[in-house]
Image 1 (tube, one colour):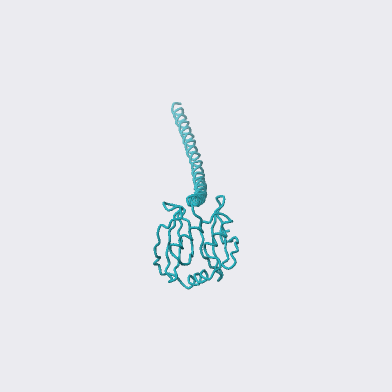
Image 2 (tube, one colour):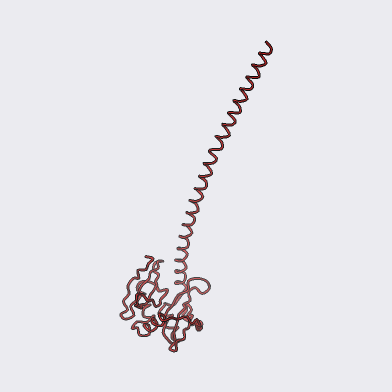
Length: 218
């Protein structure tokens, strides 16, 4: 009789232990599965956050560029036409481009490229007050046949860089003007800023007609 009681007790204990182990195993498996799914969701969220941050950075860069343009324009007391005229009085020749510096210590200063009659090219710096700060010769001898063709067209043009800047000034404040060749035709390319928005224009060398430039970025 005692032997039967002992066997029954051991059997019950074994069954109870197996049930506890089974529940323990089930709990461990259940705890593991949700953890894996949570990790996948967190990674996806991080990717979305990274994309959002990249878009925000791009927008910030665009706003920064516009702010630089506005700062440069407000920091210069002379127009593009006036800067070109001052540069040519200092260094006679053909003005092939003029650009307003938009950042750093030189913000508000004009850089005017002038080619003299002997073919020498000079970079003339004009301050925001119209004073010529200096001129230095560009010693880079990398001009090609296209550059020479553009220069020839500019020398024979009825409308020079100063007049192109004056013509485009009706569209906004001119920040840059320079020669541009497209499909064999040379014209003045002019950039303006108005109400914080930058635009590009073409000015014909022979008629001075101003048309909006439709670039590949439009």
